[in-house]
Image 1 (cartoon, helix red, strand yellow):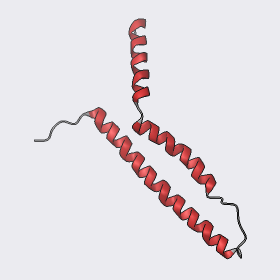
Image 2 (tube, rainbow, N blue to C red; image 1 turned 60 degrees about the vertical axis):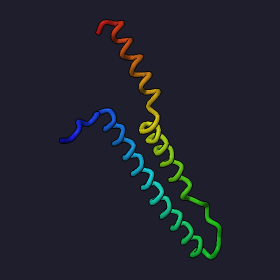
Image 3 (cartoon, rainbow, N blue to C red; image 1 turned 180 degrees about the horizontal axis):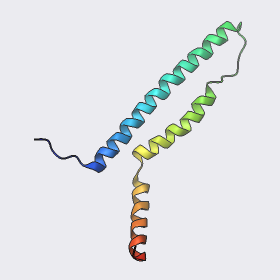
Image 4 (cartoon, rainbow, N blue to C red; image 1 turned 135 degrees about the vertical axis):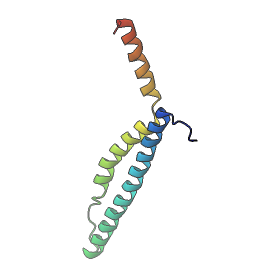
Length: 93
């Protein structure tokens, strides 16, 4: 017989798995962008081109950091939820 699933832990596990997939995709796509960059430098006769893969890495990195915080750092969220709950109890709603 299967043990019942804790829904809170299941949601947390799904968030963390989603983050790990996001992180893997980030490294794979940005790795390909850097390979393209180095190939184009080789074809440009040795001229140094601006390292344009930096921009997608930075932009996507901000989103990745946000995803990490939502998946692994929920202590602040818990505190906020508890505060709002207590506020609603005091208001009688």
